[in-house]
Image (cartoon, one colour):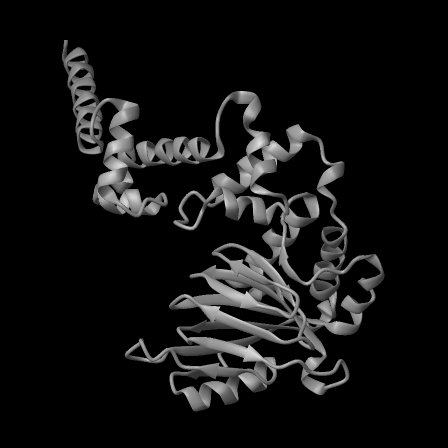
Length: 320
């Protein structure tokens, strides 16, 4: 059930404080209209906040671990848009589809790049504090490994509302405990113990999942895998292929499939290019031509004509 929806900055701050604790929001004056919407849900006793805003800054001062509104930490999934998050010890860039774990008792400042949407799952600090002896990490979370994959799938289900229908009081803290159990091995994950072939497959999977994001880059993948860009490039050296070439090849493959998809026949070539991470239609046409020896438009028309001709031949045979 939607508890709060606000477009007024003052009411927004009050609603955010009620749902997430004391945060201060600064309006981005370059925007003609402030957008601020927050929705709180309860899934079997676990609080989940759905947030959408175009604020210029959302910040929280350092508190104490016994302060009432510091009792939770926030497991965040960035669903739309991007933001820079300033923490006490470092700064991170959170892109679409990425996860972060934020400590409510530490100073946090989120600097959105325009309109964003994310979901924040509230987890008890005292349970996460128990992981500190096992190198508890706050900040961006890598989804490399089985636990990371399961956590991301579960958080996406929460974000999409897929679990709302099934939530009930009898669940108790099942969701909360499951999320914390999956976080524990992620915080201890050491890439040095992972075979190179496995790392390459994980890098390829991350790239495929983010082909549609304009922010996809070797640097963003390296950051998610907690390795340097140089280390990432080395994973692809055995095939004499750079990370950038792999990304471009996969984007072109998906774009070509989209051009031939009957259900997407109404979509323009520019829309398809943008859907697969290209920000410049002219650049997309050039790289597409270099691979297929024809423009995207010619490729689409040629395949359509081939299919029409094949249907005509089949029909002719059927009438003989």
